[in-house]
Length: 399
Ligand SMILES: *Cc1c(COP(=O)(O)O)cnc(C)c1O
Image (cartoon, rainbow, N blue to C red; front, side):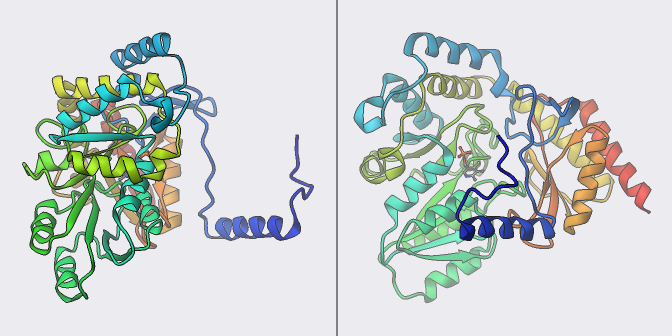
């Protein structure tokens, strides 16, 4: 069916939508969904072309790991495909208990609670905790799900300059005393791959009686000597930090979680609308999430392989004159700045057989458009050599 030449919606709505899209197109920011013909891996077929993917959050390649697939298939055969209800009605199975115990052990917390996604975990946790009269201090580069979650509360929300711990301290020094204060930050920033200054934030939070919440979606499974995440990297043993994470990245599955004390988890179960009014995850997903945590806890080989590739790419970029952040992470941005130049480099790399997504406003600040490379343990050293070679060739061609 093709409705494109007919206006099937009221005029006010149709013109609202098309004017907005025209405006987006004029700025070069129009987005379209790309269709992949095969499953997650570093080689994907798009429009009948095979390209090397440098854009997945499946950092350890677990999304296509045989152990994960078997765990998932086994759960489907014994439990079925759907969970049938929300967790507080009848969707809560022993698969949840097993997974939440595994998350709590992995995050070294007393308890944990699994949500349908990382997005809904942030929505549920932040909107439950923060009330009218409270203050939320949120990093300027926090993930959109945190920004949206803050909008669900009646608390005062102050966005602090990226990683600016002095601003946080000064603000708390000078603000009228709020009822409660929540400081929230990504552990690893999703667009830049930088680490948040958690030890400093933790110290300030203690000093001012504020609660610190770390969304470690990108750190979980990757960062720290045991892959437990950003707190593991800093060797920070602070059970009072609220840790949020997702199964959808290094853990190769789907779902979000929060880890903390029994008090916190009971409070959230009783308040978080995104868990109360949303259907429980399917058994297959719970089982593979659990297997993902088991693999990461017991087998560091994938993480070791990933970091060898990260270091190879970082060394190559430095020798091409691009700056890199001090701490190696699988997210490696190449900041280009201008939107059309960024699109042009991305197109060049695409033509050479690499998919490196260009990241434009509003995802990043205007003037900070970048190519966001993300690596998987399934990439090869040749993939990285060839990518570096292509980036070099683009700049040679231009000069
Ligand atoms: C991806 C991401 C989320 C959302 O997680 P989903 O499970 O994909 O909904 C939340 N926070 C951060 C920092 C993320 O990078």
